[in-house]
Length: 157
Image (cartoon, rainbow, N blue to C red; front, top):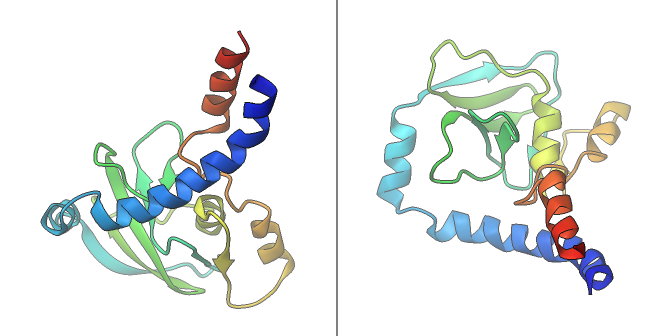
């Protein structure tokens, strides 16, 4: 049974993440509650001259105040929100941050790729973009690799 579960679990988790993204967008919080959560943020257009930004398959990226999984494709109701990022073009993004002086995080394109479940959109092709493609889905699932391994380990006991 554990062998069967080990084979099926990655696809099951990927399907759960995909349906979770859709559910989170459609019914996680009421419009008013979401609007209130983002109302306290300070919004600005941020330049990323060094990075070539990409647009992930969830469009928006959330930065949360957590020791693990600092960036997420969707926001849980208990996540302490630091900032929201919406890439507008390869060099600019709309940023909503709780701290007006919040510096743009280093490695934003990689974070976007990691939180994309299946794909991202880029303005062109380059070796750097191809390297980003290797990170697709790394942080898109609802469980981390360590959490998944702990579940499988418990099932094997």
